Length: 219
Image: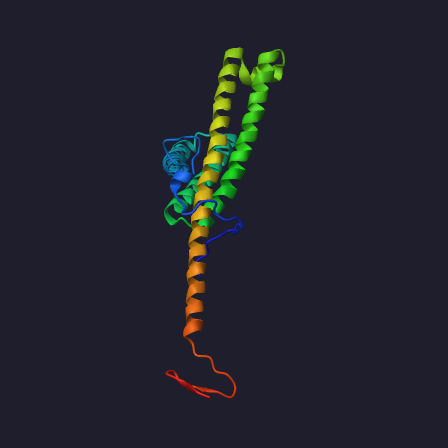
């Protein structure tokens, strides 16, 4: 038996037949399904290249690194490996269209994205505090001057918006995969019920006290 669901929702598709055009994500020109596919392929390629660069740096400069630098690089490699694995799950979900893969991806990606969003909010808060009052030495160490603080704040804000959009896009794609599979299962259930009903109608019934022939019956 092929495992289809990590969890099976009880909702029913609102529109039938299921079509990609019903699943938009802020862009009227493309469906959320195609946007998800395009961005996930790009993210997978970029993440894989960054992972390769980190591994290359580790191999080339391992002897010249201090202990804490090696630990930091190992932490980066570990985090990027998790990100790369999550992107790999999204690629599998694109090709298999089995809900279990996009559900696994949602669980892992939402954890990573949520942690990143919280980190960005902390950075934006610190930059905002520095812009309001730059006398705190703690913020001076990290932001140096107000120009740098503004750049960090705007960059973090744009990254924050992108991550929120990514969450919305992922959920839109999940809805399409979910509704598509539920529609298929519903059609299969209807066909199965019709087949069972036809078999019952064609099967002769034998009652006590009567002998039936396939062609005729005599009481």
